[in-house]
Length: 177
Image 1 (cartoon, rainbow, N blue to C red):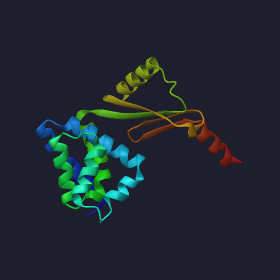
Image 2: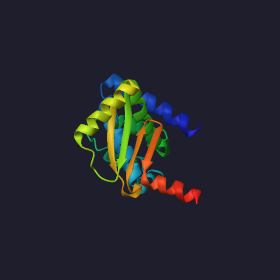
Image 3: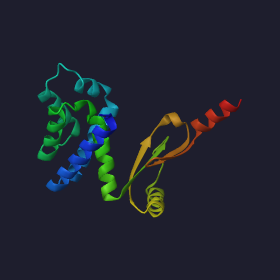
């Protein structure tokens, strides 16, 4: 079975289980933390895929990465994934869970990348209001600092990308020369 189907099925089943338990939001935060840790620490993926690491240690490591220690539903979900030999897919499962949660709650993920945290609260509120009106959904807004874009901004809304960065513009000029 392909990775996308496995991840989607597990994420959907975990979401439904968490919903029954009334813990879907707690799991959402845990899955966000888990996905973030996989992105920040590539050694985490290597550790989870290490056949010499016991399932119990994998479970402990994943629960620690979620940063939610006491949630029974989260622990149970991670145990099921690891015990079923699906630890390899856990990063994708976490991302698919996030997507499932946002979709069911009517949330739209918007991410603004800039070179500095110069976005004031008023501008942020206006952008969120504008996006909310255009998407007919509640906006989950994140800002990211990235000096590599040199200037300008990159706005990502779900699968849409508006790249108004200086880096992209310089690359376009470079390609034309």
